[in-house]
Image (cartoon, rainbow, N blue to C red; front, side, top):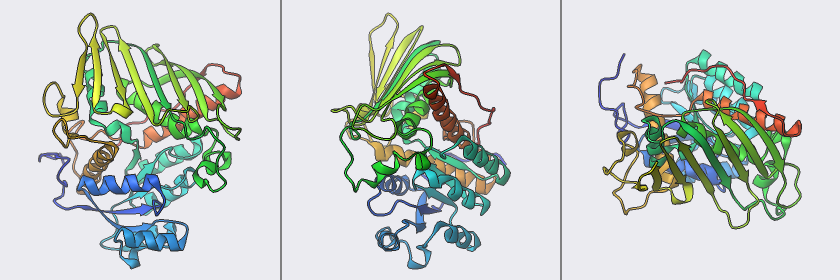
Length: 403
């Protein structure tokens, strides 16, 4: 059935909020707080159930803080999947915000229970596990929505559609980087998050490349509309001695042959959260910086530069304007991007449950196929590095969008 109503990200599609559960995200979890804030701010979700921590005391305290009823605070995610699937008022989607090595088995349990999945990146720790989730998503006809929040900033959406509409012409080169400083010094002994990020049994074949490199890669192919066809990568440890890389230099060729550079590091003192991208074509160039997220710089070839500022009108395309919440001068931030992601997820989940076919591009989410692409990128980088920096093709099957 084709949806004929107005697809408004500010209003729940079914006239009510959807029921959402959480796995992970309890006290002390930074990523969990972002998800929690984004879901609440979106106005599309009520958080009604959770297995919020593997520590029972933390789980109980977190559930009380999130105002989850005691009988829907679970001791483990398997019990939660079974119990919620059996309830008439059970959750309609689950957010999985646990460490990497748990993603595959938790997502599998909820998909098999008939529950849509909102999954933190990277999708899994291996390509084979990612392929299994793609196949299971297809078999169950449920959604897997990957949480790449930066793609839900209004000015990233603006840049994406400007490139799609020919603002830079044919893409000729692209540079993308994600640079941080937190892994420069030796890790404190109680830094659990830093420790597991350096354990190949828990993160797979790469550390920084999987942690922040997947964000840079996703931003690149989202904005340009092209994937990386082949690459060569070198992994380095530029901070304190550690088991896995904290820095990666990746040279690539896009599908049209255009060259580019992707650089990630977590060991650059003075760099905080520097996700930056520049795309140049034969008609102009675009630049966006996550630390100055409300501004997009555009320079048409041979003309004066143009600065687009997040807000209504004044050249903002409709696809970006629907992600904007405030007038210019009232700052929006990362939590607003999370809210946009959860609003679009709410529309997609509601439409699937109601049997609606949404209009094209009414939501622009990353699905199971994007999770697999991220894993193929990580594997290609690791293959190249381990072979001494040889060129490697990113191979993968053609996978349709989920909505």
